Length: 552
Image 1: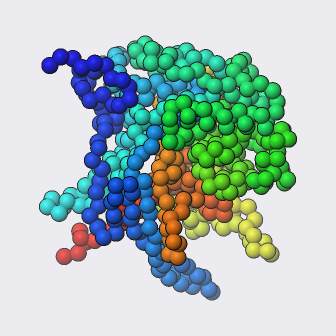
Image 2 (image 1 turned 60 degrees about the horizontal axis):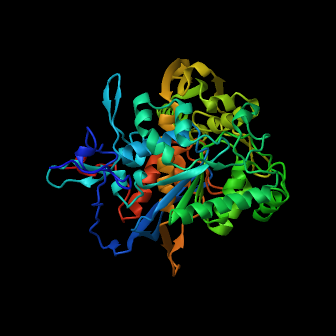
């Protein structure tokens, strides 16, 4: 057989002639999705419609006595089966995360293999929850063994290779030059992917408000939308989104902030507390309107999902209210890739084991541009806030170990109550580049006054952990635009609530519906994501009771 022509890049290569190695399983295409045979699930040419019963319990407390009443709420979910052509516009396109994401998607798209000191490496999507992990869907009736399938096969989802890439950056470097500046990927991969990176459009001019990011970033700021008129900036960003969508004939664009961490914006009544006020504040170029907020508002007004991958408070109350009014999806905050993800697991393990963490001390140092920006105190404070709340819900769930907060006369809680001492330190060490070091100490009380200390050292390549999370968040954001629900009494299907709290698994400081409690437990976040995907096809969430193994 004659060698096949090179891939156009629009699809995952299927021919082994295009590469030394076959396509990695995490990058492969599997056209046959899961099919559920049930009266609760109906497949049409356009939709998957599923009935689902949300089971819970109502609890009342009187005189120390708890009364629990089981509850059931029937719903229907309807998911559009066709995955539209999707664009990803990143703010910070030329940064470490943006350039790494573009290069690795291109490597997967063309199945580029490269040499390392340990041998031949092939592209993959390891680290992506959706592409590289599985979900249990039932039991084989013959072998009695559990059956697991890739999460990406539960519902039709965007394949990362199909994303159309673009965005903005305050630095005007071409994408191939930005990749070389980042120094994240192996040289041989950079060498081979450079021609494809050079074909990508240069980053569009972005917004630069010096007061919001560290002064040390000024040297990179050579690709800016001119002027100081924030309303003009908003209109330009909206035009950029429309032009990108039209140029590439896209059905949907996901706008993603992966640029520098900003300082926290001050919440000011009359400025950023309502939808109308935030729009007026932009029109008046108010000082407390951050660049990320301008991008978020632009995406909301264009009806495109916006995800904040950094820790600042982009979503002021006014921005959330605007998203509600426009029924446009928003999600975040801050990518949860290493230390915080591990902390959400270990803290939950200790508390659930009846062990009482007394202090958690976390130290980091890294040498990439993120670390450079975070060396400024106000930007570090944003990161410190997003990292410091990760154990709050686990502490609140166990008042046997931790004293509850005092209740004021009006019934309001006074502070958090008893809580572990929790400190976070981040230092900039240029020599280590993108290789981040994280050291954690967990100091806990154990049986009868004893003490336990757990020390963890974690070394990781920051951008190679973050990039798959950007893909997962983008894919889930697109899915939100295709799922609608209907409760009893509703005649028509309606879109989901605009705040995408299902993204919590990938975020340090999950954005949730106002008034709802934040869940930081990684296990509960993962279970919620699985349960939602299963609900959309009419399946119950995992049942770990395994009753059949506990009875005759």
